[in-house]
Amino acid sequence: MSFEYTPPKYAQLIAELERRIDSGEYPPGSLLPSEHTLMAEFGMARPTVVKALGVLRDQGWIATHQGKGRFVRGRPTMPTNQQARPGRELLDRREVQVSNRLLAADQVEAPNRIAAYLGIKPQSPVVLRRSLVQHDNEPTEISSTWVPVEVADGTPLTESADLTQGIRRYVESTAGITLDHIIEHITARNPTKEESKLLEVKGSDALLAVYAVACDATGKPWVVVESVLPGDRHELEDAYPIR
Image (cartoon, rainbow, N blue to C red; front, side):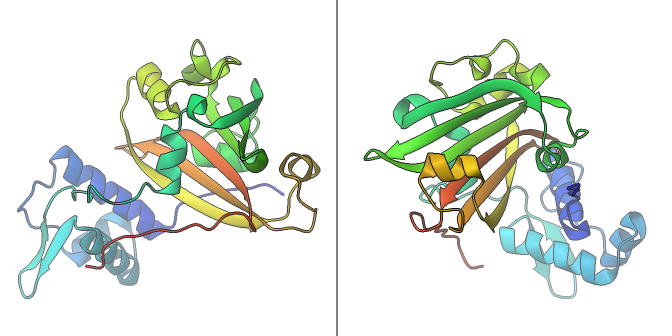
C-alpha cells in the first residue's frame, strides 16, 4: 500500500506562522492577523485556525490579550535544563560514543514513508545508514538514517567508519543550511524477520518506531532518522512546561 504523508492543516498553518515570525515579517510586539484574516488567506475553517493559534500560544510564540487580539512574542526560549527529546538525541548522537555495529551505508531506493517525509518521489535515491546499538551486550535498538544522495555524497555518511559527529553536523555542513526543528512520529508495530533476528525478539512482539524528520526554518525536510526499539526494553519519557 502506498504511504502518503501530508501534515494536517493546522500544523501547516503553525509552520507558516512560525516562519513569518522567525523571518521578521511578524516582528515581536506586532499584532497578529485576526482569525478571519487567516481563514481567508489560507482557506481554512475557524476551528483549524483557532487550534493552530492555541498551539502557538501554548508554546510561547504569541500572547493573547483579551479585547485587543494576539501579539507576537518571538521564538520561545527552550529551558536549558529540559531533557533531550528522542529525535534530537538521534540527530546529535555520535556513533563512536555508543556500542554500535554498522549494518549498512549504501545508496538505496527511498521507501514510501521515508520519501513522503523527505518530500521526494518514492524510490528516489537516498543514502541509508543503519546500525545496531547494544547495551551490556544486549541489542537495544536499530538506528537508521536516510539522507538525499546529493547531501550525503562525499561525506563520512557513506563510509564504513563510525561517525565522530552527529548526523546534524554533516547535513548542515554539506547542505549549507541550519536545521531548525524536528517533527517526530511514533508508531507501534511487529518486527520484520530481519528485526526479529537482530533485536532477538519474537515476530509477535511489539516494537516502537520513532521517526525524526529534521527540517530547516522554512519547513523543508533534510534528513530522517528512525529508531526501532523493543517495546519491553524501553520507556519513552518527556517533560515540558504547562503554560
